[in-house]
Image (cartoon, rainbow, N blue to C red; front, side):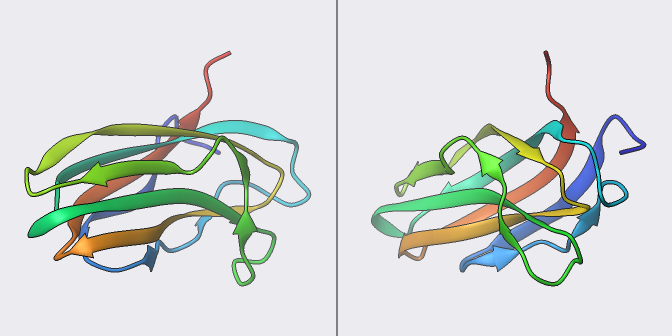
Amino acid sequence: MQDALQVLQLSTTKTATFNSTGVNIGGSPSPTRALVARVRYSAASTSSGAGAVTFRVTESDDDSSYGGAHQSPEASLTLSTTAIAGVLHIPFVTKKKYVRLELSAISGTGATVTYESDIQPAQP
């Protein structure tokens, strides 16, 4: 990785599951890297009742076939009719060349979330 912060997902608003474009974070085979996906979210809500949003980081050698990176449990938000905003930090470890952020689940009536993400080195 060349920059201290590398864009993982530009600002987007979603109402359904979504995969960001794969980001090349280094040559393959690569050394094991400990990184953090920082997800800034806003306007996360439902139109009625409760819901949830779940993010996870996936990895790939070829930017084609992706699988889950070794990470803490998936990062989830609980939604209600009151919009929320904040930041999630998803630590993960990878030896792969590409990573991407998945909005792997979104539930609730009229659920929506606006978010953007970047990758940064994990702090020791």
